[in-house]
Image (cartoon, rainbow, N blue to C red; front, side, top):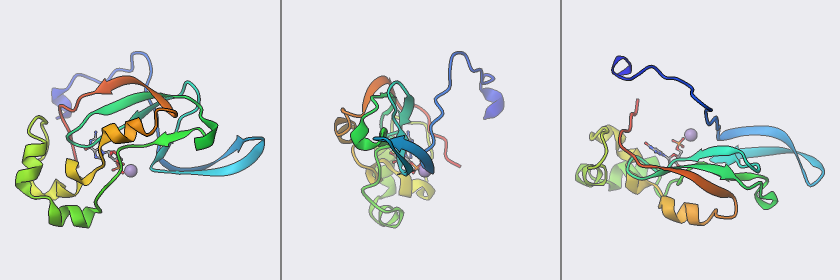
Length: 146
Ligand SMILES: Nc1nc2c(ncn2[C@@H]2O[C@H](COP(=O)(O)O)[C@@H](O)[C@H]2O)c(=O)[nH]1
Ligand SMILES: [Mn+2]
């Protein structure tokens, strides 16, 4: 696919946003080891990405620096089903319907990441209005999985 796409160019900025790590930070005057697992840093003004699922929207967000969340927000919608349950419960027909509008894999190998395996990204965004502002809403068109 790489040769079919235009060469990647960094025009203005890249959103660089890792989500499973521990680092030393100072909060309320205390030096702490902060673990962000399925969470990203959301310092005031900092850009982040909150992905939905193969079938839903994703968001580019700007952190509000909320001290109560140690300047963090969610890294994504998060799961409602384990990978194992998703493989057992979600049918290929359901997966194909949920991703009908997206160019993506439609085989049983991706059932564990089918949209129904994740929480509603709308609910998750509504629950963190005090942590981030939405800068851009990205609509899923193509999803590439290895
Ligand atoms: N836009 C997409 N978002 C996705 C997809 N698969 C998962 N997700 C979301 O990302 C987070 C984090 O996923 P992880 O695999 O790094 O743990 C997850 O909570 C979902 O909300 C996808 O194909 N496209
Ligand atoms: Mn991950």
